[in-house]
Image 1 (tube, each protein chain N blue to C red):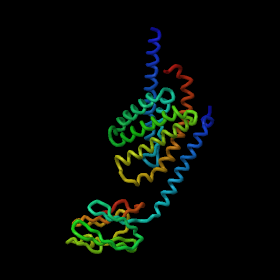
Image 2: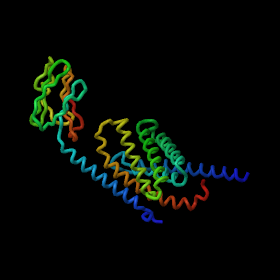
Image 3: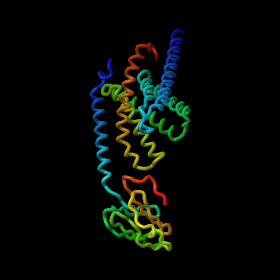
Image 4: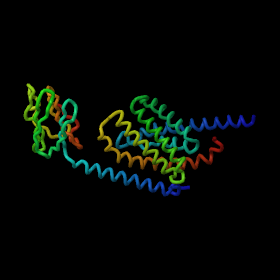
Length: 179
Length: 125
């Protein structure tokens, strides 16, 4: 009996944690829209912090849940639900999460959170460029943007990793038994 | 722990690889732009010839109803004679900028300048 209560308690805790992570991702996503930037699609990708936290505090399924719910709710908030921008966001987000969890599972010794975050940002940008090519532009000229996207993925990956690193240190003190 | 302390050798290699890839692709793109402009000759939507504008040639293209003769000289392409009744393609004159085109509707021949660098956004006629 005691064990069942404990199990329920743990499930409720993870529910609250995931909800908070999704909310955090949404707030960062909305906040990011107000940062001035040279090109409209060149974003730091701060919302990836919540995905990375879910991946490190929980597991792959939790990270996928966070990214999907965040993208759906975010697109409803800014009015891009089910249009091409939404497809780009969800495709990039899911692929980035899968790649990050792959590297976290099999190359945890080789890459720290920094490398994993960079891989995520890189996948996100490259997948989005491919999706743009397949869905919208269909002109090879857009691959000229590749170097810009790769170098911006490097910087956004580093920024996200550093912030997530400090948040993780903080959360692992306060989280207790979150599983 | 400060974040700088958690960086592994793998991370460093990854960062270096990314920077190198970016530099290599950028250099490749910059060099690629010097290739010059090409005239593409399409018949019924299929690219039949792709000629460098620097080469001076005259080429005869078999269209739907007959021959169209395209001349490339002095970095310009033009249709010098056509079997079509209106000869709008001949009257179009010569083209040289990427994106410009000469269209011969009866013969289904399109001459188009293809280039890496578009000086103009759009051309209306």
